[in-house]
Length: 295
Figure (cartoon, rainbow, N blue to C red):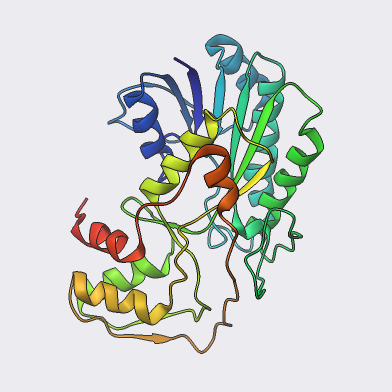
């Protein structure tokens, strides 16, 4: 069994990852600036900002694996505070990597984002070689760390993996997601305006957690970056229809003040090939689960 240090352990993705790790018998140390009162594993309250302090945490715990899910979770958080975004997502992540390099960590999985790529529209699904053109401070922070990992990959004994998640939705998400806005509107009976978007791939939080754990314990990874999503291309109208089926009618319209988001399909075959991951929860089922959740 592994000793896993999990950053962001109190967060939206960190919690289900922790549950899966513990169910598999691994020893988990959670590191998060916010303490989860319900957590059944050891936690340390830390924001990753002090490299010396973090190095001591690593030295004391001696993790074999690190899953780095901590940090700012999307482009809607501090969008006009790039210095703060970089301090948390880049400086904090560099502290995690440095601590891992200085101890006996064997594997580090970094939770990146499709935001590192930015907007794109191609006739065929893009693969891991597609150039990064981030268009938000958050996306820039993810691209910066993906470049750091690229510089280290294959040049150190530390086994590195970066998972580029599409926007994750499901119970526990606190920041903006169009699915959550539609669900809230259906529950309240109030109209909602949403940003227009091309059809896009989504991923339910349970699938995202499964992908992170599978990647961490795979001995067959052949590349550094992997796209993680469900293969369905979901249109806004289809998502609204699924919400109507799960809850009731939803009144929605496009926000004319916001530009259309352009994001095409991602090639998901590498994750299936290298660590057996294929998302199981389609958007209809994901919306049903979210609608049923009252926590």
